[in-house]
Amino acid sequence: QQRLERWRAAGLLDGTTVARILEWEAQQADVSHRSRFSRFAFAFGGLLLAAGILLFVAANWDQLSPVGRLVLLAATIAGLHASGALARSRLPALSTTLHAVGTAALGGGIFLAGQQFNLAVHWPEGFLLWGLGALAGVLLLRDWPQAVWLALLGPAWLVAEWGASDLAGATSSAPALVFVFLFCVAYLAAPGPGNDSRWRHALAVLGAVITVPVAFMLPVVPAIAARTIDASAGALAVLWAIALGLPLLVGFWLRGRGAWPMLVAAACAVLVVLVGTGSRNDLLVVHLLYAALAVGLVWWGVREQHRLRVNLGVLAFALNVLVFYYGSLFDRFGRSLGLIGLGLLFVVGGWWLERVRRRLVRQVEEARR
Image (cartoon, rainbow, N blue to C red; front, side):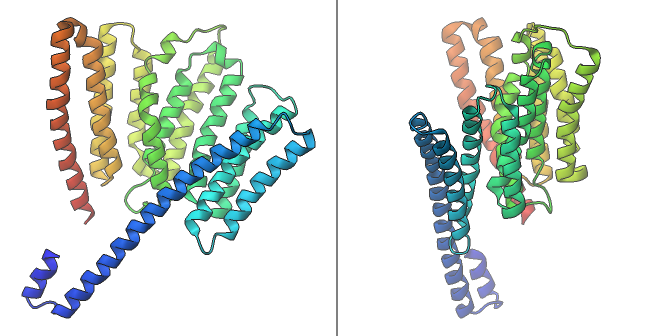
């Protein structure tokens, strides 16, 4: 509004044009607000609907005949997708929600049908079939929830195959964790300059949500996982080639040369696994590696004008400092001094990091303009 007033004072716009612009902007803001509310309502309602359907089927499963079970599963999945197709033209957001719930119900139906036919408890092929259903949804609907389902189920199937194979007892969980971590980085790399479609941003949010817990497990879980048998060098080489190569291929397919930071993330992830948490010096090296990764993520976000990466990098840096203080320094100070230091860390460190984060986000927003 200040700019419009300045342009009117300079004679570039008349009063009528300024009033029409302000009226149009007010209408667009109202539409945007209603759109955000409807998206939230549909998303939350979709989660409740999916949970209710799965609970209803599970509660009445034993009371149904085998044929009735299959009919119920097929009718539920078909009904959700048919309802989504009917709402496609008038309520696109509702249609997207119903199709997403239909894909969720497909997974429940696949595993319940597998139970019906007494298949193995660990059934990786169930994730494969579920993922193929999500792939069909991506090809037919072009909706971002279907892309998120596919992004979840593809790695889940491969990790489940590893867990059901003999290699699960012959190796630690390090390759699987590195595999998942790099897929999260690949999803974070999906949006970029000229590649800002909605499904790419959804993949980035998915990667951001999963990255932090997986990064926390990377140096810890492989050290406590026991091996029951020894794997051959060839099997280990193939396993690590898949764990490193497949996420890198997906990242470069999503972004091309813009995904080159994934190479740095892969090197750091392997170093974190190799160093582990055996001693204080090892822990210090791990914290330094994670601090470097967090700073690199912030730099990546600023360079490509991606706000989510900046926020995630700042959060990761703060969590890294907090874990380092609590794990390495808190006991040395004693309870009272340790709590005082922890409080100062939250107050002073939080204030400083928030100040830095706001400045970086402002820089990203100005670069977008």
